[in-house]
Amino acid sequence: MASTIVGASGREYIQGEVLQRDPKDNKPRIFKAGCGNESFVFKHVSQPFYDLSQQLALEFAGSGRLRMHVDANQNERILVYPYFNNTLLALIREDPDFPPAERVKILRVVAEAIQELHSKDWIHNDVKPDNILVDWASDEDGNKTVTKAALGDFDIALKLKDGKPLYGPHAVGNAMWRSPEAQTGRGVTKASDVFSFGLVCIYALGGGDFLLLDNYQELAERGISPEQEILTRHFAYFGPVTEGLLTQVNSEVWSRALEAASRTGQRAVEDNPLLRFECWGEGLGPAAVDMISGMTRLDPAARLTMEQVLEHPWWTEE
Image 1 (cartoon, helix red, strand yellow):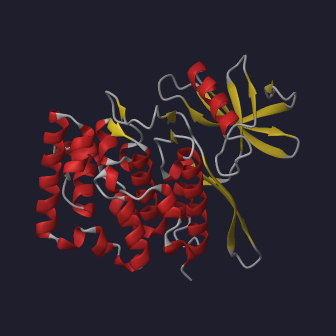
Image 2 (cartoon, helix red, strand yellow):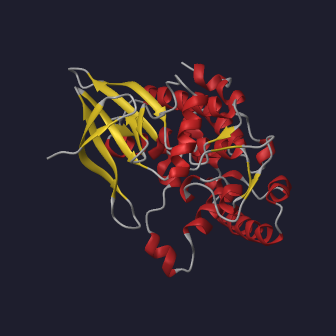
């Protein structure tokens, strides 16, 4: 018999299929659930994240761009979220021809969601395509239209104290979508979210082949970690290491590592100048290249803010 959970609202949810298991102990962690004719997602969380989620829900009550929980069960530490049909990552993998104009609609919602967080000194810390939720509809001719999109998964979101950078012992966020400073865990700010969003834009607009790592075994055989490979690619794509980045990271050990990755990236560019983003991104158009280049500057202090991103003329291009 299916399990039933009663939320704080008094609504009863019937637990359905397992969507995700905990990688540590293989216990079910995320479920699909139903209440009447509506679909939801159950997420079993730790007490610290349960408390964090309550704080976020209070600060961003009513937001349509941030996927906050809509109900909860405190005794079992379950958060109840709206259900979405897809993530941006899966959507583009499953349908490489998904309409470009609809992709831009999704990116706009995400940009506004990040700005909403930043306006209250929160940083997401894990902006990536699989944390972007999408619903879409298809008409009788097969034309697809985005009906709703939101930025979700706030497991490592935090509120900056007096706007000061975060300095920690570990890398922050998903390796594939991190900013260079987030790879070090040092000097993480709102600008780190901006860099990650720049990578998401590249992915959504068709540049996934330049970003996604396919052959981890080959890297391992060469003694290269995924993080090393990604850093090297970013220095090849977006330019050599900057003094501003090294100053922000503020670590001799990490400075040497970043400078080494930068040298490797620059040698790759000498062999193949087309590795620069302004070359392989040219097909996106000058405005898109200008906006994304502004988000992926290696000096965090020189990156566009999310306000500037939202004001960029690329959004209103015909």
